[in-house]
Image 1 (cartoon, rainbow, N blue to C red):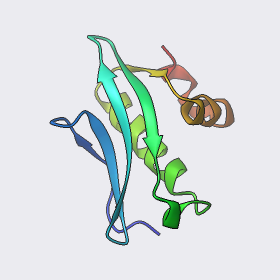
Image 2: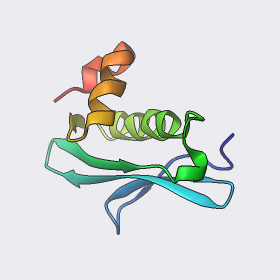
Image 3: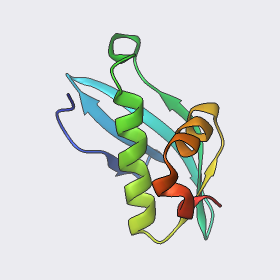
Image 4: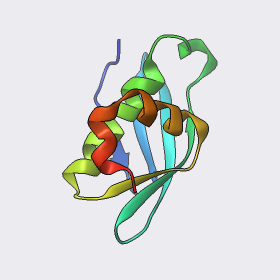
Length: 92
């Protein structure tokens, strides 16, 4: 599916996932204790393939590794967190 793992592009404040030469991303804002994910974007050609979920899974793992919480600022993140209780400890 994906050609690379999720990365944190701190310069652009977004998590990114390259898939087939196309970029899916999740914009965020950081606070001292949390990451607020404000928008997720998956190119039309990649939709309905689980790419956004893969992006979110990787982003949440990076957030956890940094010892931060996550605040869902977009509907996709709200839904993802609801469906994935293994990340409940991150909810800020």
